[in-house]
Image (cartoon, rainbow, N blue to C red; front, side):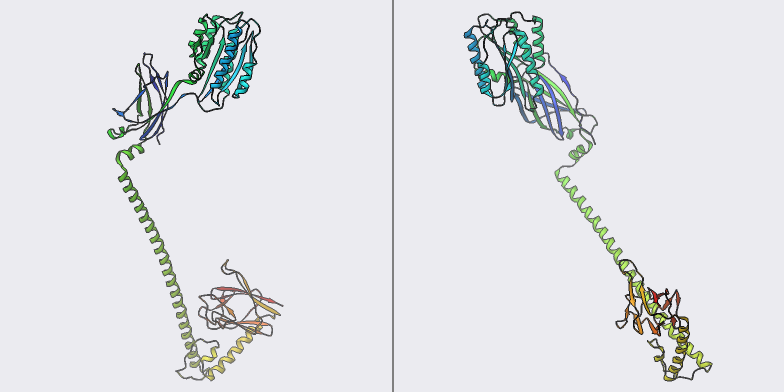
Length: 525
């Protein structure tokens, strides 16, 4: 990012015309604002601006030339009245009246400090805007003494005026001035003519003009030089008080604000050199020129050089369209990914169902093979071929009465074996293990003689498990002992990680897995 760079080269003519200086250059390219000050302002000021960049020079039309201020908004005035008896009573009273007229002509924000000079400088009233207090202070001065010590009083009053410029917090244009009423005599002053010249230099440097009104017939050349060198006026007779105040408020320089639109970018290629702007001021008597500069960033140059408003709008539309297309593609791929996951989930579910059905058919086939084996060994009587073997709550129900009797006998023997392996409990329960926040742990008390576990609505303990069967397993309570059966479920029942193939007695701490759901058997003796 290029930063605005300012530097100033002032070129002054040798004529006695106005002196021009640049205070500030602000660039919001192509809009440029320049603040300049003109010392010793004269009527009929004409400004002209030229720009140079990359070997091209262009005269720029000005949009606005605005006078910011040429008069002070506020005046700090020190009034010094010669109150020695060397001043006649008539002239002293006239000076007091003239001072009051000056006070009446001041604005509401102006401030005045009053001094009397009679042997030493005495401050009658510090800076105040209260006109009534100021009038009272002027009237309270009395003639006394014969030694004026004029220059001592001027030095003290000028120091007071100088301090006012430093202590004021106002951001407005402020002027300071000193107004002296005297007969021009200086008896026994400790300051020499050289000291008076030093006072004049101080007044000129601190911009404190000295305005002098001398009563009497003899002019004072020293006071004339003092007033002239500080930028003030010397009066043998006071003009209108309002014109004096207006003269005191005229600032030594006028501030102007110049605004224009630069078009030099249209005629050159971009350069890292700053744009030079030459501001000239013309008056009927003289001409001065001052040079400033600012930097155009490459981004600003490209935007203005190659993109007009219509092109810029088109580019914005294209960019927004591309952003919408990209967002649409992102949404499409997210949606497709979601659908793919959903499709894979459905496929996986169908695969698991097919595997369960395959295992179920395999169990049917193994059942038939087992019966055929028993028939071949003559351990059970023959049966009809049209009898279908299929899983049921009670496997004996799938056979004819003869085979049912055999299987019931066999079932009894297996149950007897299981009961020998189990311990008696006064109460028992199944604790379903936690599977996170979705399925917290839960306790199921086994208070029924037969408790069916499954996904069917007739189950005593309901399983919300896609791998479970409607009637998956059954737990029987026989004389305080608990035995679990696998009701020919699709995925089987497991105790301590082993699939049960016959009735299995449960002991405290055994882990059961029904489908994908895990339980722990808790027995209380």
